[in-house]
Amino acid sequence: MTKPTLQELLLIEHPIIMAPMFLVSNVAMSIEGMKQGIATCIPALNYRTLDELRVACKDLKAAKTQNGAFGFNLIVNKSNPKFIGQLAVICEEGADFIITSLGSPQSTIEAAHKVGVKVFCDVVDVAMAKKVEGLGGDAIIAVNNEAGGHRGDLTPEQLINAINDNCSIPVISAGGVGCKADIDEMIAYGAIGVSVGSPFIASEEASVSYEYKQACVDYGAEDIIMTERISGTPCTVIKTPYVEKIGTKNSWLESVLNKNKVLKKWVKMVRFTIGMKAVANAANKATYKTVWVAGPSIEYTNAILPVKAIINKLVK
Figure (tube, rainbow, N blue to C red):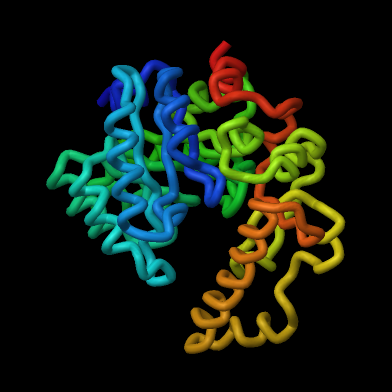
C-alpha cells in the first residue's frame, strides 16, 4: 500500500513540521511557518491556562494559509494534570493535528478523530510504534538518537527502517535535520517527512532570550551532551560551564529512590519540576544557571534569522 506524503497528509507545500519546543514555540513562529508552506506545532504546556490555549487556537485558525497547517503537542501521561482540559480545548476549537508524547495516545486519538483532527505519536522503538498503529494513530513520529531534548537510542536509518518493516502507517523522522540534504536523507530512508526543532530556536520570532538564541549560534554538535538533571530522563542540552559544574547524572539519593517502584514516579516528578524551572529561567532571561535544551542540528545555525530564512535554508 502506498503511503501518503506529509504534504498530502496535511495539505502543505514542504515535508516539514516545525517541532513543538517547550518555551520556544509560539503563535508568531507558527504563522510565519505556515506562510512558508510547512506544518507547525506548539506544546500546549507553553500556555499557563486553558483560556490562553484557546486564544492561540483561534489566532492560528484565523492566520492559517492555504498550504500551511498547525497543531499542538500534548503530554498525555499523569505528569500533566492539564492534559484532559487541553485536549478538550483543541478539539473544540480545531487544529490540523495533535502530536502526543510520553504516554498512551488512546484517549487523544478517540477524541481527536471524532472532530477530524489527525494524531501523530512520538515513539522511540518498534514496540511503541506498533501500539500506536493498533490504536489508530495517523502517523508515527520516530524520535531518533540525534533529536534534541528527550531522544531515542536508534539512528535515523535504523529507526525508520525498523518501523516501516513492522508498521503500515506513515513515519515522520524527528532528529538530526539541519539542512536540505538531511531532509532528503530521511526521506530516502523511508520517512514521509521530518520534524525539525533546534534550528528554529535561533529565530527572531522565538520566545526565548537573546542569550539562548546566540548560544545556538556559538555552540555546535560537539557541545551537545546528555543530562539526567532536568527531568530524571536523559535529555540533550548545550554543555555550558554551569551544566558541567552540576554534572549530568542524578544524585546518589535519586538513583536509590528510582529503584523503588512506589517512590520512583514521585522522585521523577520532583526532578521534572526543579529541572523545568531551571530551563524556564535560562530560556527567558540571562542567568549563570544556563540550562539550554537543544540538539546537534544547531551545528548548521550560524546566525539569528527570521523563520522565513531558516525554512528557505531547509528547502533550497
